[in-house]
Length: 193
Image (cartoon, rainbow, N blue to C red):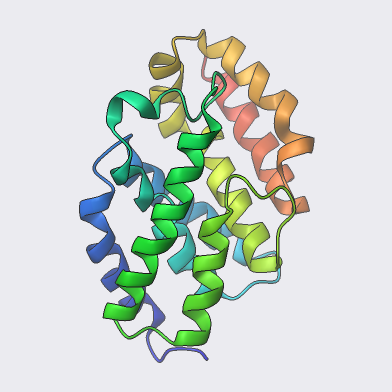
């Protein structure tokens, strides 16, 4: 089902998610990843009424993980994948609560929640929608915003970090557009050094 005004619905979801996104720079991460999702939707098959709520809500579960444990559970030095999994499970629960409160279409809620439940841990996407969410989430790491945040928070040299990211492109990205955008963003970041 297409909503008469999806942008209004997405804004409602964003507003309800905001209080869960005040950790780990997740608000800016969500905004940048959402922009990448829209870009991917222009070139890849997907349904914005699934993709956009999923990308807006995909990291709300980090709110349930103590901040001192978060840095061990994501990024290039991640060691604690059990904690990373907690954010997916809690994120799926919170996303369902938000979407049901907003009376989002039930059949779409189930797909959105399933995408969130494995957006980091599931290697193979369930659908085109899941592939776009996965790629939009990963594209954040190549953005100028992430390039200002991640090397410092992970304690690594920016050039070394961008080199490491470049090595991940073929293994991480599901869509051809995702790989193409990642390479474009990587070139832009290297030029800015």
